[in-house]
Amino acid sequence: MDRTQKAEMVEWIGGVFDKNAVVVVENGGLSVSEMEELRGSLRQAGANMRIVKNRLAKIALSGKAAEKLTDLFTGPTAIAFSEDPVAAAKAVNDFAKKNEKLSILGGAMDAEILDEAGVKALAAMPSREEILASIVQTIMSPAAEIVGAVTAPAAQIAGILETLESREAA
Image (tube, rainbow, N blue to C red; front, side):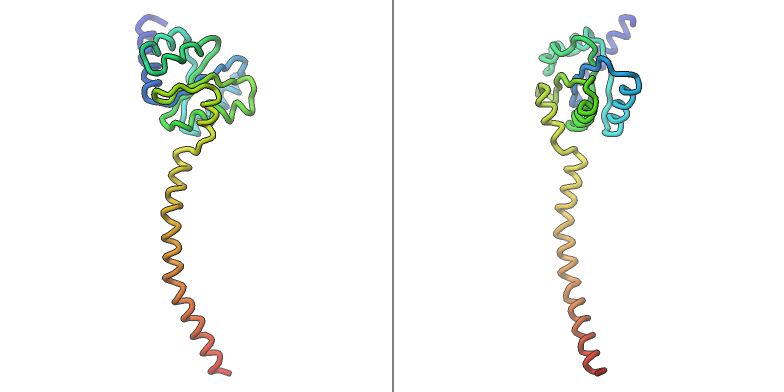
């Protein structure tokens, strides 16, 4: 990797930490198929993962809000990131439960620095899609009740007419 590639990588890493929620993981010992499985689950959740050079990550974080994370960049590390604050944390946490070779080191969300427990707490929160579904359900519930209330008298009238009709026939 030449100087210009390193400079581009430093700029890219800094941009990732500025725009996304980031989870730093230690990925030592993962096989290629396990890594592909992890990346697939991240993609499905709307997140990405990239193995980064520790030295370049430390340079990229200097002077940024997430500068306290530089201590985490030792050994084989990677970053999982997503615009949705919960997506990357949830996907990494779910994978780490199934595979003990992957360990969560910490993360950052905007200026907030997270330790391993913080990332796990973030993973336990509902995702953006789950929150939106809950809001839609809350909005639609009264509408369904109104439709039921409006159509109920018609159903009752139909029942009364049917009863009267059966009495007349008898």
